[in-house]
Image 1 (cartoon, rainbow, N blue to C red):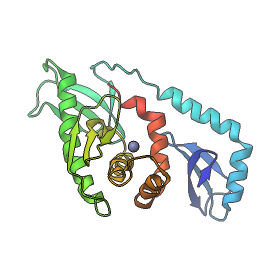
Image 2 (image 1 turned 90 degrees about the vertical axis):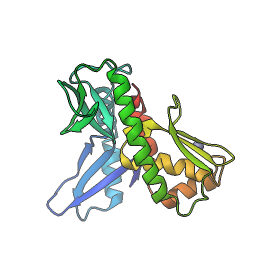
Image 3 (image 1 turned 120 degrees about the vertical axis):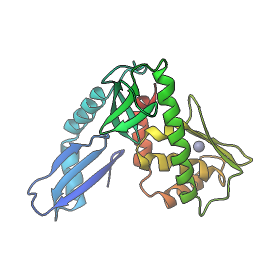
Length: 225
Ligand SMILES: [Zn+2]
C-alpha cells in the first residue's frame, strides 16, 4: 500500500494482535499486521506514529551512508544484485574475482583490484542485462542495439534511433530495480519524453515500480566506487 510518499509492504499474520512497523534491509517500509486489520486502520496507525517512522528511516539512512571512494581492503562492502558482499583477499584462485558465501574474493597479489572487480561487474552486467532485456522485450519495439558500458552519471540511455545503452552498475542494484532500469529505457523506444504515457507503459509491465525509483533515490550513492 501507499502511505505518504512511501510504498509500504503489508504482511498479514493471524498470530499478530498488534501492528509492528519495520524498516527492511533495503530501506523500504513494511508493516506486520493482524490478518483482519483494514488498510485504513494501518494508515491511521502509521499516521499517528509518523514521527517515529521518520526517525527509523533516518537512522537507516545514517547507518547505510558509506564512503564514496572505497578502499580496497579486507572487509570493505560492495553491492552485487542489491546484496552486500565483503571483500576478502586470498592467496590465489583460478579467476581474478569470485563470489563465495557473502564474500567477494580477490587475489592478494592483484596489482589493480579495483579494475579486477569492475571487470567482473561488467562481465556479469552483459550477461544479466542481456538476458533480462530478452525476457522483458515482448510488447516493446525492437531496439536497434543494446550495449553495456561505463556511464558515470546515468543508469542508461536511449537514442531517438533506438540504440540503448546501460550502465554496468545496473548489476549492483536488486533484481527488481534492475528490471525497472531496463524497462525504463525500453519504454523510451516508444515514448521519448517522461510523459504520462511513458510512466503508464512502465507501470503496465512493472506494477509498483515506484519502490524501485525510491530505492535508487535512497541507495544510489552506494553504487559508486
Ligand atoms: Zn528516461
